[in-house]
Image (spheres, rainbow, N blue to C red):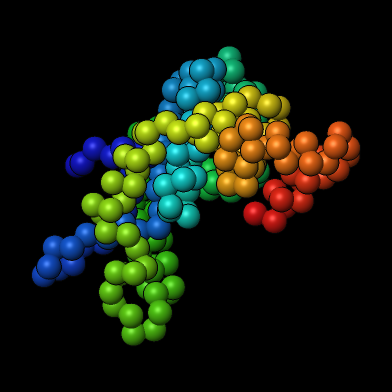
Length: 206
């Protein structure tokens, strides 16, 4: 068991003879209902999802452990799960408790193994060039801990209602700072409709 700088679980392919390790394109963030409730309140879960979206892995799994209906914040939790799945493209999985979570991990492991059997190029037995080496993945994720101006801008954007992590990333990829966005707006000379349409078109192109 190794500590990860991001997420709660990843899947690794290890070379039988060379011991080279490659990170498969799947990562899971596991949240107990009580933890999810508290992370929603202090916005930690938005920051965590933003980091997952920037991890470089494409198959993002958000696992919620426990019954949201037992929480007084049930509606907030259900809304967060809906947003995470429908608007941000995560695969939201739900389990009843720890034992169910372990069974889910076993099912995911089998499904991921089957996925690579089907999706690796024919005759392609090596993962180099397809998946990042473990050490490179860890280094890249550790870089996410270094807060940049763009990161701060992303977090600020996510305080705006209906601005999801994915939308914030789309905006920041085009306009890394608030100043760059303001400059782009200024070129439209106060045309509010054109300003709104500018970001809408760019977000739809992502």
